[in-house]
Length: 234
Image 1 (cartoon, helix red, strand yellow):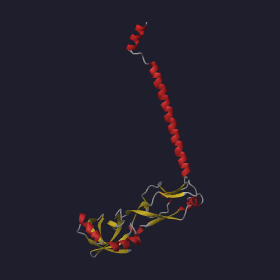
Image 2 (image 1 turned 180 degrees about the horizontal axis):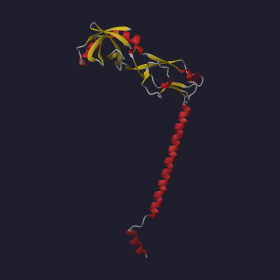
Image 3 (image 1 turned 90 degrees about the vertical axis):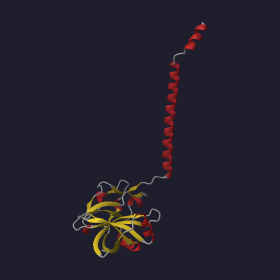
Image 4 (image 1 turned 90 degrees about the horizontal axis):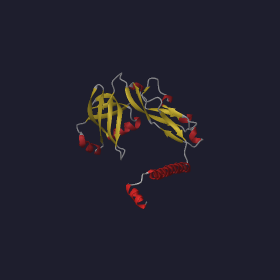
């Protein structure tokens, strides 16, 4: 189990920006039987632990000399630099089940890609699970060699999950498949045909409108002025 030292944090709000500039990562420690506490951790030390275990990893935290087991529950990143911005630690209570997202790791190359020239599509990169801390898994390996045709799919229910782990994600959710690659010329042809059909429909509708308008004009009664003129001519 990885060890990590953290400290109580007094700095909050906008002042945490200065902490980050000094390579200190702000965070929060909480749990079901633990009052939430703002904490801080050395950025480089956290980075080392994270690179070894990743998210949903149980650590042995040292909070000002007090040892406890906790989970790296959630990490926030800077959208521009990708640097860590904040970390949530979840204190583990003995005997309590935890709910976490676990990464999916795809192994191999699908035959439908090799032989049929298809494109591999991963619809999910994580699934949610529930288990006791001792049964926690960090990733689930998926053999994609079963994707032999464009009709084959891998669903959540097809994954190999340890007995003591409960999957919370929908069983019928599609995890991965191989899609047929559509050539650019085919796409253009379909677009042109679609446009032509729409233009034809619009033309037909316009013709029908013109015919109706002409028919309606023929049915219109003559104006009073026209009647007077007709009488005078007689």
